[in-house]
Length: 472
Image (cartoon, rainbow, N blue to C red; front, top):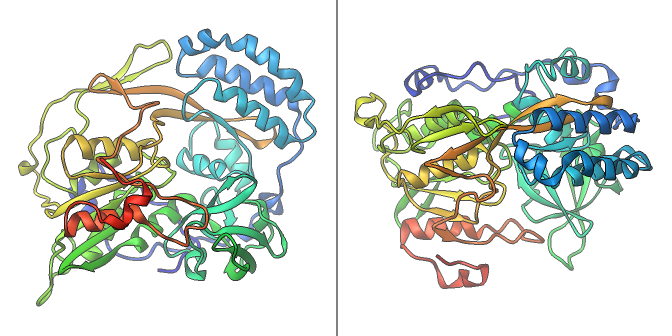
């Protein structure tokens, strides 16, 4: 499937049966070219009145942040007063934002940070919360004439380590994937200039760039010619989920693999499953078609979603009873109940949809967050199969986005959640089988995936993986 311009997904489906019936397996239609939007859409971060920015952030946190207790415990207003001079004295907006985010980090709460147009999360959160009153005008101004937030990119994400930029994710089917970029590659430059995640590609959409990478620590740099496209997060993640689906043949077993990039669009997950399992609903079983023996669900990503979507996706994986997370409570900033979900059990046998019935494992890591780790918790609690990888982020609150001066956005946690009386925030989900995946110069190696395949074919863990920190 071409990975270019995609329209926003349609409204979410209320039930999995309805969701499956609406699948047509047609590639998403292309949106009008975002390059036709006003030039300001690709400009670098503008100059900002730092005093107005800082005061707006402090005031919003004071009024909206999820926990009055945390604000009181750290004496939020006193801490803000102490930090304000340094923010106002910052030489650049980026430097001021760094100082503000250091202050916000003292709250020790997820879904709470200040993002600029030079950050991936700026576009992820605007897209995820598209249409909310707090950012509606900002989106209309910055992305006028197109179907939603987008940024110029190649479909690869990076992490900065000791001043170096390493690829930590590549969207399947993206230009970066087609060009051969791999997990662990160090990006040295783009068109001969220092790499930055967003700015390096501004003004270059619908062109190609030379991305210089180093694959191993002492190797000579190699150059990849990569197309730059407008990436619209939700559509891109849905397309990547579909494109990730494949069958791994090992020891006489057929093992399906799907990488879930966001927990917002169950349709893309269903379409991915149907494309590799002919006996999954909407699959096309013909002649001597063989069903999958097992399935690997890869939840290693950086984008959340919704609990409703997580439930629909778990519905496709087995016959466990629901709800998958037991008693769920949502708490407001005063610690009062903002909504609960009882632990009534609903037998899957009453649902006409027959889910995947083979062995299943789920891959997780420190980038599995928000609705992704809620889904992992439900997978674990319902005993679908083992979790393999490293602990999830422990980033489980619900946030709201607020427009800030200068076109910046403040993500603010506004609701916390408990599952069976315990929070996942700050603790996350622990894997059954712990396997590390070292990043720098990994050359695409994936010991976590290999551990999952071994578990599904032989049981246990191969001896060669001991060096990767495998253990229970």
